[in-house]
Image (cartoon, rainbow, N blue to C red; front, top):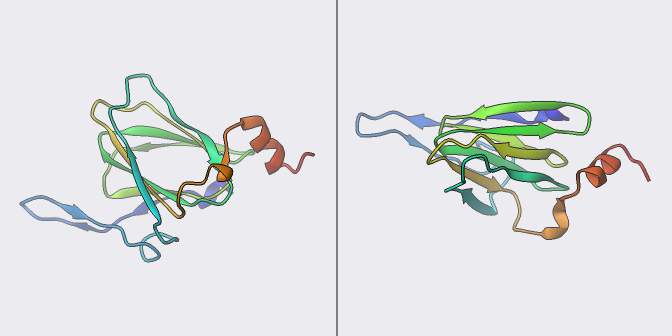
Length: 136
């Protein structure tokens, strides 16, 4: 399942006055956008994420600066370094994620397929793993 999480190269319109990148739901990414949020002013050494979603799809973009995203599907793990504003990391449902190594001034924007719903979260890693592996 971790192979479903991949970098999506977003449109980049280059211009001497400054570049422009845009994202269109269900055109550039495999879902309609229902919510947008962003992380900023993350203190040095802090970690974000530390959860998985049951049904939510996300696209994570480093709008400014850089950070690392650690993905875990319960069987495989991989780390992606995000540092380009025209790349987005597609994260599918049932994927544990942790975000760390934020550079100074980093801004992490997340496009989400649904509105906030606490019932969609796994916040306990052991519960996530047991559900992934069908352990009762």
